[in-house]
Amino acid sequence: MIIKIIGAMFVFGLLVSVHELGHFMVAKLTGMRVDEFAIGFGPKVWSKKHGETLYTLRAVPLGGFNRIAGMDYEIIENMDREGGRSKEKVFVVPDEEDAGERAYFRRPIWARMAVILAGSIMNFILPLFIFFGLFLTQGVATPSPEPVIGAVIEDRPAAMAGLRAGDRILTLDGQPVNQWSEISQQLQGKAERPFKVTYQRDGKELSTTLIPEEDAATNRAVIGITSSAMYYQPGVIEAAKLAVTKEIYLIGAMVGGLVQLVQGTVSTAELSGPVGVAQMAGQVAEQGIWPLLGFAAFLSLNLGIVNLLPIPALDGGHFIMLVLEALRGKPMKPVVMYYIQVTGVVILVSLMLFTTFNDLTK
Image (tube, rainbow, N blue to C red; front, side, top):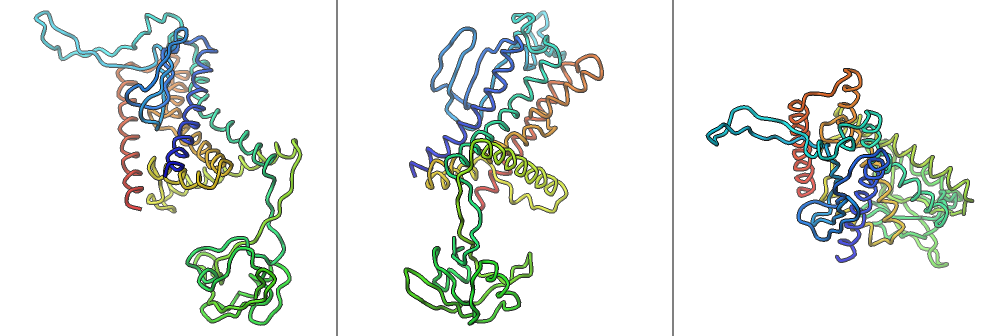
């Protein structure tokens, strides 16, 4: 349990830190004043001021933020002469006057765009380094052509028949097996009937009987096994190329998944929130640091893509507002920006509650 908790905290902390560090560094480089760099939400656990910036760790490690002078709108109600509240409300940008030309809204549009995009860009950069390190230190796995079982899926025919990882398939229904590809070929057309398998384990020849299932998605007979893998050690240049290729593939798959979600071909019940992600991170943590880093790289890409969605309060929503400002030649009215931010927060909170409900019902 301790390992699961530490693993989940490590993943969340790493992704949030990298994302917010991107915003922080570009804000500083473009001359903005950053009043606070925070990891987590809620009460402060630790804080230290260095220069003009307060660095804090907060109690809930499910996010983070940069408090950049002049970036957030807030609402102030006017007071009448007798001290009562006026119906007129004033929208202001905190600290803008105090920060002078270093306030967020006084910087050029290109600088603000760079700050907004920097978080997601860092989430795309992190996986490149992780994948590069994984390929360079752990090697590259390729499917072995040998008819040796790499893994057995629980509650499937092979597992129920007693087959294990490492077993070498010798014959299927009396037919010899010399290559892994022959297993799939010999299974076809033989679903839902007894099937004799002879195999080798620890130098001994054994046999069992199982009943292949028909996979509904592919209409093929399957027994629930995967092939073993061969590993080879790539050089530095090849590892870098493989890291880029893997990231491009994953980004394409994730974007495709989002498109299917919008089209309704994927159920929203498959969405996971903080609870589900923390549970998965904890389970992966028990497998070791390298699998946990690989999982963190996968989540980092997810975070980078989701943050670029054109939803108010997300980086993508902020970026769209800046594009509109560039096209109009002037910023949106403060009252409009304020209510756009409020709408975005409501959408995000609703989505988080929905995904958390999904996590708890699974």
